[in-house]
Length: 100
Image (cartoon, rainbow, N blue to C red; front, side, top):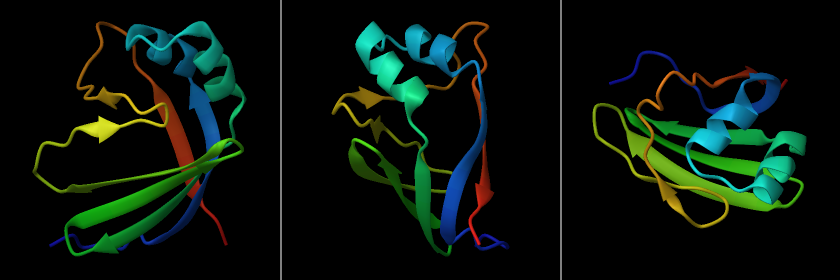
């Protein structure tokens, strides 16, 4: 069981190397432009060790879920499935802060 609750709304606070990350996983130029311009909000619902999050952007919203210690295949906003553990030497850091 997870000790902390992450339930709430989170907004993007900073993003480093996101374009390089998207390029490394095969996202095309037009979708990268949209992705780089987006200011997503995450709505997270935590139920013990199961998390459901909805990403809300200017172009729509998308929901995924995972359980701690279980492998997850994410379906991204363009409908493709991605599972990324490492992508060469590309490190994507996106930090969110809880919305009040």
